[in-house]
Image 1 (cartoon, rainbow, N blue to C red):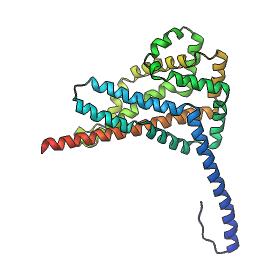
Image 2 (image 1 turned 90 degrees about the vertical axis):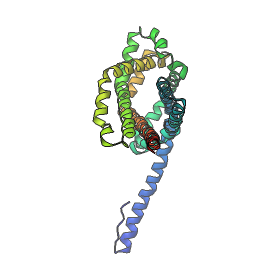
Image 3 (image 1 turned 90 degrees about the horizontal axis):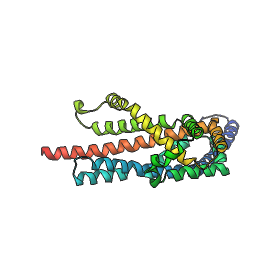
Image 4 (image 1 turned 45 degrees about the horizontal axis):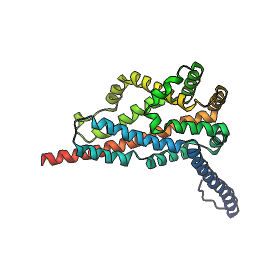
Length: 285
């Protein structure tokens, strides 16, 4: 709101009445936006996706940890930190806040309109089903018989291209790992710190392999998700994804998920740093 001191009472009253009507409209607009975002996060399957992502991230770290030569006490500490910083509640809060800042009501309505259609509901449910742990664990095996359908493979690759799925997944991995390692090394003396540039350079070396892995995994996920949808129905979905509002929704959602992952990775790295510095101090005393 613009605050301004004026000398004429009548002018002040007029200005105030105009501004007040604007403030009320903004409050109503904000309330509507919050309601629409809540609806969007549930109806799009995003809530389920965030919960699934949090679990798979923690599980992935734990598997990697247990392959290392570290003590049970160290594994227990790291598992505890993972549960704290990679929890779905925090991620949902981060994503919601990002949505509030990035979307307008006009952005949200067309997306919700699609999600409320019978086809939109079916596709969302199929995508959620394909994210189930038992499916993810066997995703390549389950998708293999579906890869012979070249028309469907082409459609799935088109979807990946529109939403920038593979490209975004690779970027998320690189940026989240960079954030975590930078936080972890930040408390050590200058020469022991890892620069962002050197971290990214190391990760960039494996980018091609990572890209191929992500592309294959996402293709398998899509083939499984859309196996009960006809080609004509999937074309309708693609047509929706190509609209201006849907493209913005895809981009904002990916950015929001990436930011949430970066936040979690940074805080996790800081927690590991705190533990490492404490151990270092104890060993020198």
